[in-house]
Amino acid sequence: MKNRQLAIITGASSGIGLACAEKFAEGGWDLILIARRAEKLKLISTRLEKSFNVRVHAIELDVTQRESGDLLANYVTDNGLQPHLLLNNAGLAVGIDPIHEGRTDDWGRMIDTNVKGLLYITRAIAPIFVEQSFGHIINIGSIAGKEAYPGGNVYCATKFAVDGLTRAIRMDLVSHGIRVTQVAPGAVETEFSVVRFKGDHQRAEKVYIGFQPLSPQDVADAVWYCANVPKHVNINDMVIMPTAQASAGLIHKNL
Ligand code: NDP
Ligand code: 8X3
Image 1: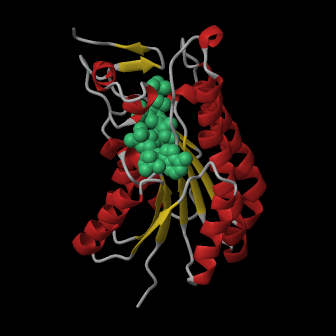
Image 2: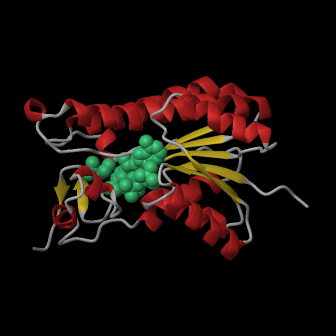
């Protein structure tokens, strides 16, 4: 039997990561799912294994912890797994304060998760891809990594970092036949705004009123496309927006 393809997805317990897990499982891929909420991850894994007859490994990891990369790499090698895809999706915004009122703890969480977390996981898996001479890294960036917007300051900086890292990592790995892609969405309705507004659901819901945001499934479709083009094709960068959103800071709302 031909080996099934295997995707590692960080931030798979909700939103875009969860939708990608569902999409790839439906497409017959085995999965390694990563997030901090172990119970949620376990339920998702069991459901996907039953529904799609694929193998799903659930690993509780906090990507902000430097050792998370080693734990993941050891899990992969100890189990003789050969990953085809790393989807660096785990990420968050915390707060939307102007710079002079910003909280350094919020800044730290964003930098540690969106930049350092992506680096730790990539540093762990890229050598495995190099050894295999195949692999694909897809980073979830954002329109906030293409354009700044008021109050976006540090979140934007982290996503600009993802944009820059995606380009640089592609150069570092091109001679090994490894593909490197960024998918950069505009507004997607997920737990993102609840996290950004620190559990204030009412404030979070207002973000998506008056227009149709992207669904996590819309983004999963884009990621699926990038992962399944022929092997000689690399999608470098895909910006995907709601039709009602013309730029990071301009959403046309019917209110
Ligand atoms: P969600 O809040 O719904 O999902 C975020 C995921 O990241 C969760 O599974 C969460 O799991 C995981 N995560 C967060 N911190 C960590 C951590 N330290 N270690 C491991 N996992 C972590 O938001 P989205 O699905 O919207 O966000 C996914 C990505 O998409 C992010 O990188 C975000 O910046 C990006 N994005 C989102 C947009 C939007 O409008 N929603 C637009 C553009 C980009 P857990 O809490 O269980 O650890
Ligand atoms: C999330 C989209 O515009 O809220 O990356 O920053 S935005």
